[in-house]
Image 1 (cartoon, rainbow, N blue to C red):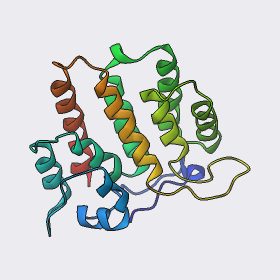
Image 2: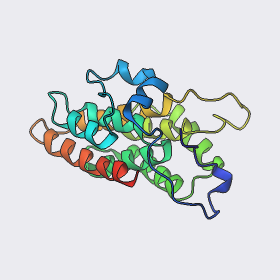
Image 3: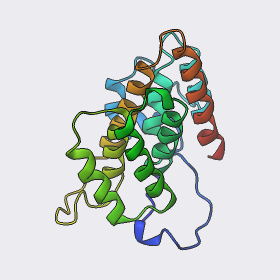
Image 4: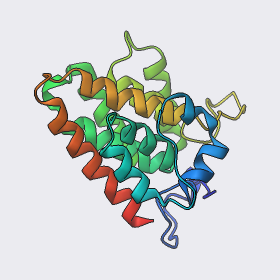
Length: 197
């Protein structure tokens, strides 16, 4: 499994790294069995990540490609992807969502511990679990201590579940006739994460 970027090392030069947590979809399902609760399809033996994503995309439940991406990508990369998905649909975001989107964009650009804690606090106390609030919770659960005074580790499935909820709930707000178009765009953007790997 790839290491999560240490927030204190954000300004240091690093060698390029892949965007995915694990080498294969099978490894992901073995390490994070919670994904199996959210998907009907399962990876095949020796199936690579991009092929599995394509198979999910062409299945009768293409939304599983969103779920897979939320779990497969490293938390910071998955949050970036989720943010980009929400940006594609500004008409379904309210003013509160836009404020969260700005904070999340700032954290993506400069992933500091203080900003992560601030976003988490705002998300926890938000009225309602809108798509951007769910993405804000994912930022809080993306790695490191959950709060300045709480060193307890966050289960690794919490951020992906929140990213998945964020993107799919945003999609659900779209007009029914536009949903397939938006879903196709989300998966197109996801493919870039698998190609980096």
